[in-house]
View (cartoon, rainbow, N blue to C red):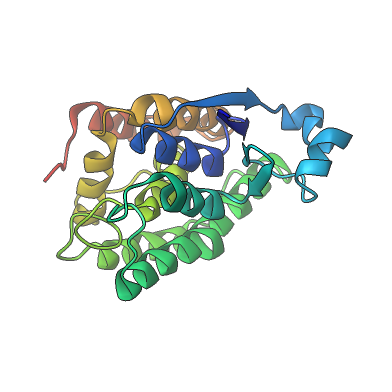
Amino acid sequence: MVLVLYGTESSGPVRSVLLTLRALELDFEFRHIDVTAGEQLKEDYVRKNPQHTVPLLEDGDACIWDSHAIAGYLVHKYGKDDDALYPREALQRAIVDQRLHFESGVLYVQWKQLKHLLFRENVTELPLEKLQEIYALLERFLAGHAYIAGDQLTIADFSIVATLSTLHLSFAPVDAVKYPELSAWLSRISALPYYEEANLKGASLVAERVRAKLPKQFDKLWQKAFADIKSGAGKQ
């Protein structure tokens, strides 16, 4: 049976799964769920995913939700035995898992908080200090390494870039001078052949909605962020 992924491209977690599917070169069907219209609350969807979240992966009779769980499942079931995307060696896997937990418990939480302030409370003078601290931590994760969990591309890169790219294009572009490793990593991931279709397109749509709510003085920063991605600035 063909894998079925339910979600919306505006969701970072959905995009991280799309990146994983593309990296594994798996055939799948994408079924759009309009969360603004409440399609995730329909009886059939809740039966498959009681938490009524996206993404949701349907693999035959199995239904898996949470992007991190889905990505690990896909590599474990459909990847090669030595697939570096989710390594089997205990320490390497622990580092990948730590980065995945960092994304869900730190980076994504910050994204949700900023989005809530902007769209729910109409705050445009946003507190970005915490986000800069997070960027600094990611810079340290990357010290001496090409990828977020070491020297090989993993699902941790997909999870973090799906959220970070949206932040980079909206609330806080990554400063290549202040965070050279992070900027180079972002350009490196952006160069993947499936990146634009699987992630950039959806991230850009979300970023446009964010930018429409923020003061115009941010425009030059966003234009530079887009230009850096297109040119591969900072690539190492």
